[in-house]
Length: 205
Image 1 (cartoon, rainbow, N blue to C red):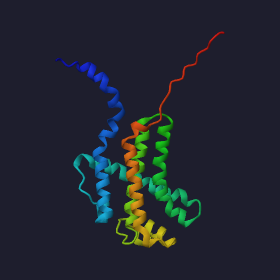
Image 2 (cartoon, rainbow, N blue to C red; image 1 turned 45 degrees about the horizontal axis):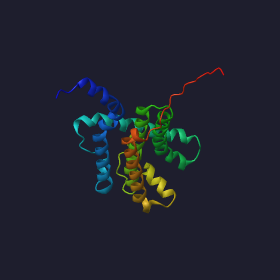
Image 3 (cartoon, one colour; image 1 turned 30 degrees about the vertical axis):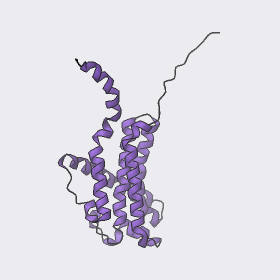
Image 4 (tube, rainbow, N blue to C red; image 1 turned 180 degrees about the horizontal axis):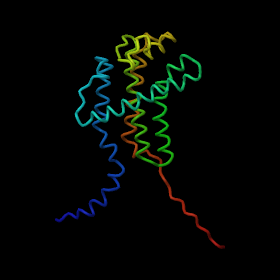
């Protein structure tokens, strides 16, 4: 029996186009989930010290630094509102909100890659922020610009509302929101909005 590879490729191409991003990112998603699970469960330093497989290191480096820039911009942007609480929360809020808006843009305009990228960044932001929240009590996470421990976002946020004793509840909640978002990213080709072609037909009756 001779296999017609041209026909096989023609039949496979739509599935490749639809699923390639999800498949390529599976190792990244598994590593992300494992890294931050260990950070929350065992040792918070796993959130910034982790032995990534070599081929994944550039991806984590780029996303980490991209979200860090957004986080710091969020403090500045929400700082104009004049509330100390909102200014502190603004870093995490903007870090999550901007990637989600990227997803909304991609979903609304039928751009599968953009929508999935937005979901991936949103998931990463939730999971990364979960580790930050899990460090609220010990405050061991290195802060940008060598800021003192007193500048730790979640220590201040939880302290302001008397929620410091519940810091791990919020950390795990944020982690699992991130994991659900990560799963939505992987299965997005199943659930994406359908695009319909509309044809205008003029009929003379």
